[in-house]
Image (cartoon, rainbow over all chains, first blue to last red; front, side, top):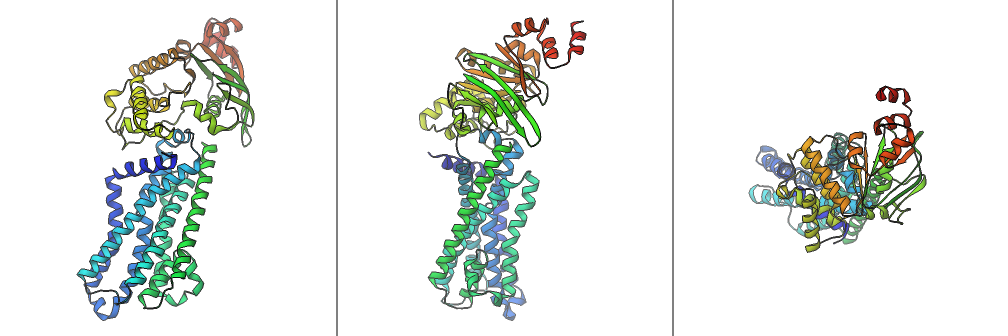
Length: 257
Length: 246
């Protein structure tokens, strides 16, 4: 088994036993559907607020793509340093990039799982509430999930690993990761209330592109496969760049240990 | 065998090493003695492949002098960070490091069982390490460091914080490994530990090797009766050494 796979399997097994963190991540994932369900029961939804609520769903989905693996990322990076297991780990003869890649894979698994829980929650909300997506949007929404959210979860995992690896302490990492998670939230919220600010080229920018893709689908506009494909590819390219940078940071950690 | 030649290392403006050289033989325990900040830990970090020296070399078994990643293949190291994964069992902690060294299946199981037996913690193998005592954690960390059965073992202040029974068990494990032909390099500021365990001592002061040899030979060379006195003389504390001599 290659080094990165050994690291990934260990991290998945280790984090799978951290019941408090898993519970917390699941609550984050279900927070969006719960909020939308509650608001849907209120009078606001009856007064034409349903499209706004649907837009908010996208913001919650963006955030859940970031939060599912956040606790694992903390534990697997700054946590290693905090408990004194980083130096023993670095003494193994495997390159830093493999260590980082293994940790990224594990975080991505939990990030995608958090996203899946969130989407399952929203599907349940559509079943139980008066809010339903406009007809004919199933295809564009599927495109949004596959080309938008899934690559975003991978990018979120990479950003968390980079942020954690670059932090000197667990507390420092917690503060920085909270800020990283605020990025999709703030971006998404802004675009919900000011959707007209989105230019055509914004489809190529990760996070903004995901929200823009969702908005277009919601408004019944045509979303081209090319646009979605470009967004997915650019998000994945950004992911690769961030993972490589995190590998470099881990190498510097070796030198500084 | 570990052959350290003229190691130099700076951290910014601070000179950590300015010429450390020594040879540690197979089947022997070599003790590095020095005051705090003398350069023991930096030397061990270089030998273990964590740092690359700015000048000089650390050759292991006649090779692997240049590449730190390559040096890591030749050593097992227990440096001053000994953290374990608290949600994994002792066995899983050790097996993880064995897997990172490329072992799998029955070979990995055999090596993990042997490492756990060497340090005497078979009975704790299936327990998660959360809540382990300092001594138990140290033994798991040592098992993790020797799971690949290295010919060279590097230990930085390994008995720090251990109670007397744990320290004795630990030293017994080191003696067993020495009998198996392992080259052990061991740093300590506890002269009693070094006198009791080590075949050879290397005294480091202000980043340089100032003496090396069998403890009795170092005493003879300095005209001191004990290793502690010799250490004081060699590290520039002659006045205190004469007080010790009484």
